[in-house]
Length: 144
Image: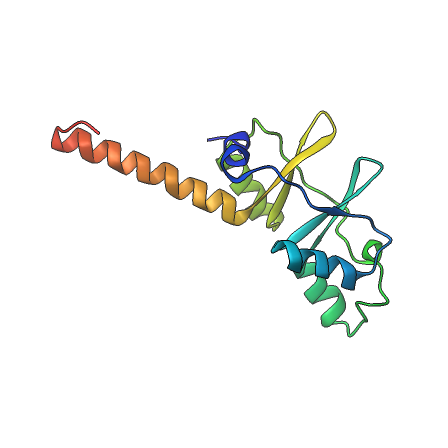
């Protein structure tokens, strides 16, 4: 299964913000959209990612004010991206080794979607269910 197949089933809607808004306003967007991370896009270019983890570690734990701190002060800028043709195993490896939970999907330097660790895990489980079903049918001699 590929990233493109995940986007086909979950959708490729991308929510983004600019780096000059407050962290508070960014967290409001994340809450309204029920997402765990938001992309920072300016002039059509991906500049960063702001996640709930960034908020917890860089605002809450450091006793900063989310209403006074701007997104560019805490966003992650070493962005790891994937292509629509990348497979799930590659994505899982990236997420595990780089310790990220969200991967922007980029094609021709344009963000076309974002996938989360949850999206990847759900897709892997579905692939495994299909494999088990086919193996069970093969072993029992029935057609699936």
